[in-house]
Amino acid sequence: MKNTALTEVHIKAGAKMVPFAGYNMPVQYAGINAEHETVRKGVGVFDVSHMGEFILKGDNALDLIQRVSSNDASKLYDGKVQYSCLPNKDGGIVDDLLVYRIDEKTYMLVVNASNIEKDWNWISQFNTEGVVMKDISDRTSLLAVQGPKAAEALQSLTDIDLGSMEYYTFKKGTFAGIDNVIVSATGYTGAGGFELYFDNEHAKFIWDAVFKAGEPFGIKPIGLGARDTLRLEMGFCLYGNDIDDKTSPLEAGLGWVTKFNKEFTNSAALQDQKTAGVSQKLVGFEMIDRGIPRHDYEIVDAEGNVIGKVTSGTQSPSLQKAIGLGYVKTEFAKEGTEIFVKIRDNSVKAKIVKPPFYK
Image (cartoon, rainbow, N blue to C red; front, top):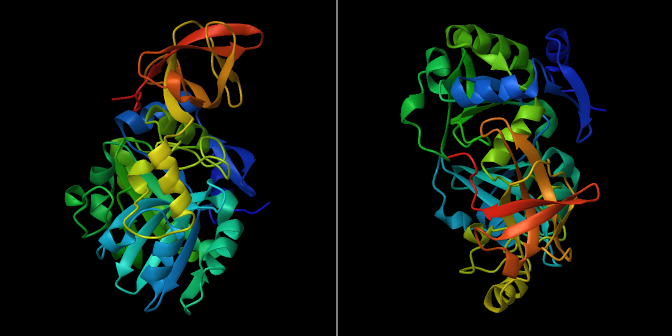
């Protein structure tokens, strides 16, 4: 099992550690609900250094990204980030990712921890035009500082104007006295905030600087447990749960990052699917009766016929009700439709709602 540059820091801080995507990661410190609330109302710090980062460089870097990804990366400009996915040849998704345009010939791809090797091999097979590819995952640390007080908490550490940064943009600059730190505003919590990318050797120094600067704002370390409840309240997909090698981006509601003004892996088949319509859709739902939906629980209709399955579910700390995501047959996907989740042997009533759950 791999460690991040901050594993010892988490252990000393009393974190409960768990194996996640091949890494030893903090799942919680003070407790998921308390940490969730810290991010929604204040500011919290996630160590997400397990994520993967690839640099693609050269005259044909954009062309390679265009061929392997579903979104239109030609729309990017320097300092802009784009959410996208890597379609496979069978209608499913290799991974979802972020594409950072550093300059006209240099891009950074941020991929899921569990898929680093898979994604590298997948993209490499399409690299026929000599794009220089570097996997910098093992030497890159990544902190996500999230919450409404994030900009205030971090501003004293950098001359980048954090308050004026637009969503899905980034800047490279000096942070806590360290040069070449990438500061981006993407976020996976819906609470606002920033991501900090830097070399491992600076991890402990930057971690300490962030906590010192954030102390007046009640900054706290946050584990992966709260990261999951926060992203689920926003209806954000988690690879391996809500999307995978068998789910199409159109079924997953990712039509907005699937652009047919260019050719990419399996684009013709996905265009046909768009024309014909999908047979199942990823939907949000909230429980009406008592019960918490969990991954892989069956979803049934009023007669008990199986119409789909739960992909993610939790008791929402912000809303004090159980919520979930799942695939259902398209005819049951309309907002307000009543469905039932099989919890143990009981059919527990729920209704389809449009994410985000937390407004």
